[in-house]
Image (cartoon, rainbow, N blue to C red):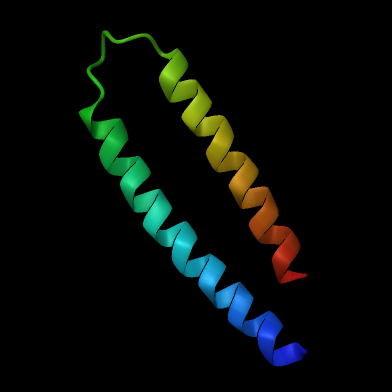
Length: 58
């Protein structure tokens, strides 16, 4: 049980790392002028993801 939890946590960490990398790359590609809603929703999604990540840790 504990082993599978550790595995899940590691997998999620790896996914979050990949996801944040692609998010950063995506944000760099968005032109400044383009409406900020896209950026805003991405930030909301990332904060939600981080909150979930913190739940996994404890």
